[in-house]
Length: 113
Length: 112
Image (tube, rainbow over the protein chains, first blue to last red):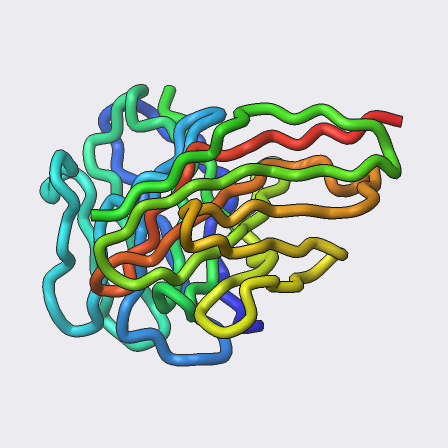
């Protein structure tokens, strides 16, 4: 299957700082990427749909000013957690493509201290 | 709207025993169904998917699932599990705009 690389795999940051997570499709072009958040022992919750060249579409309850998404090319989408707080600590997963052709990154464990 | 219910949050089994992980869905759009496996601190790996055709779907690692439209179910099975099958398993259904809705997951623990 296709390869999606997510970086970094783990990050620890101080409260109040911003963190950028990258999601790259290595061997195919993805006009659409999805960002999920997963709390411990829980399911994946869709945060937003990232569309190349246009604004991301956020799910209800997700703060767009806090979780900035940029999809500047067909192989790269980034999620920036701005002014991070401890409650933002979570596992973030991206997928390139959707539905029947969704390929997931390895996930990023964010810890805000 | 789509929803997925995984009836068991945890399933402990002994090695080489059969296992069934249950999944029920509801969908107002398509009925494209998926099972994913997640190992600790990793992303999701597709086990199998049902799009159309035969209701019995075979996937990787010896897993299979059966689509039952009348019961709105898509249960995952494996006739003989290994220690290495210990992981979290997620059932998912595709909704509009290619979005996936996931169940809460089932932790399969295979004991020696």
